[in-house]
Amino acid sequence: MTNNVKTIRVKASGEYDVIIGRGLIESVGELVKEVCSATKIALVTDDTVDALYSKAVESSLLSSGYKVVKFVFPHGEESKNLITYGNILNFLAENELTRTDALVALGGGVVGDMAGFAAATYLRGIKYIQIPTTLLAQIDSSVGGKTAIDLPYGKNLVGAFCQPIRVICDINALSTLPQDVLGDGMGETAKYALLDKKVFDLLKTDYDMLDLVYLCVDYKRQVVEADEFEGGFRKLLNLGHTPAHGIERLSKYTVPHGKAVAMGLEIILNASLKHGLINANEFEEMKSAVKKCAPENVCPFDIKDICQASLTDKKRSGDNISLIMVHGVGDCRPVKIKISDMWEYLR
Ligand code: NAD
Ligand code: GLY
Image (cartoon, rainbow, N blue to C red; front, side, top):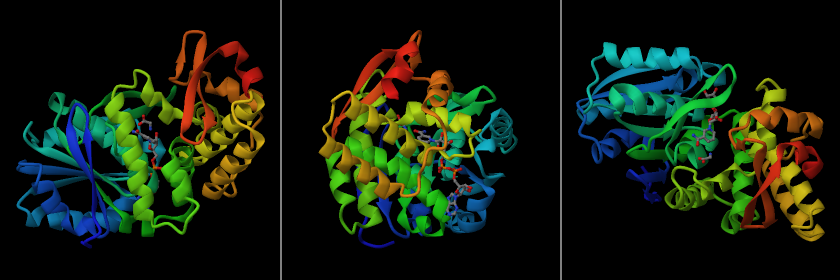
């Protein structure tokens, strides 16, 4: 573990630290021990991450005196379903995990969302720790307690708000990410750049990834602390997500989430310019920030089809949909529009 470790305290319904540093995976046992008195830990991961990091995590947990049982499922969004979720629950029961035991989610957002949901519901809830290993999971999905699985009807349709007891972000884990997965995380970073001036400014520099993860998590902390259960303010984190949702659906989920978000941000920026919320200079500056994060991102779909495909979005309520619009860097606000006006509004 290096000395350059940053900690962010999240004060939500559960209070916990997000620890960000390099080489933390080797010290997972100690970091878990500080917050978890479990006897047994269920380590849940996907096959790719298993081959890379399970051994180090398992041996660190064993050295700290935990009994460890491991559940591995095939990587990818296709696994984030009722079947894998059921298999995790059965695995926890077969291995007799009790309410005082805990689960460790090691992997990207798919592992974190699904293992988190299993932890939220097994025995009506056991404690869990997130060890996010993708950029997207480090800056977004591991923090804030949203857990979910997909249904054939759409993504994240079943889930629960359940905060982890600790999040351990090892920046070194990002070094094994394939370029496209890293690029996907950068797409989600573009969202933070428009939401938070600090991220926007950092991206203009020769930044350290640790600082980028730190600033994004710290922004998310503020939002989650203000509105944990997404009554209003947390909806800001959905910036770009409504068109992104349509793009993901149209592509049959071959366009990954972060890339779809970057495409969605461009659609929102265009509409923000069209409606006079930002001027041409602001538009160019923000567009180039998004492009810097997602350079080769070209939306392959027509805006009319995107609007139609985004109608299953959870941000819809009745005949209205809430879109987050950009009024400036660090100044994004919701606008409620009629579903029937969405295409006219965004095109
Ligand atoms: P992912 O979990 O599928 O990971 C992408 C790929 O990278 C997988 O093949 C995985 O095996 C591999 N991988 C993970 N870590 C690696 C590493 N260190 N080295 C090499 N390979 C590695 O995808 P993701 O982009 O991390 O997460 C996407 C999911 O997150 C979606 O299901 C989305 O709905 C969810 N999400 C949730 C929230 C939330 O608030 N809960 C927010 C945003 C996204
Ligand atoms: N990723 C959106 C949220 O956590 O609210």
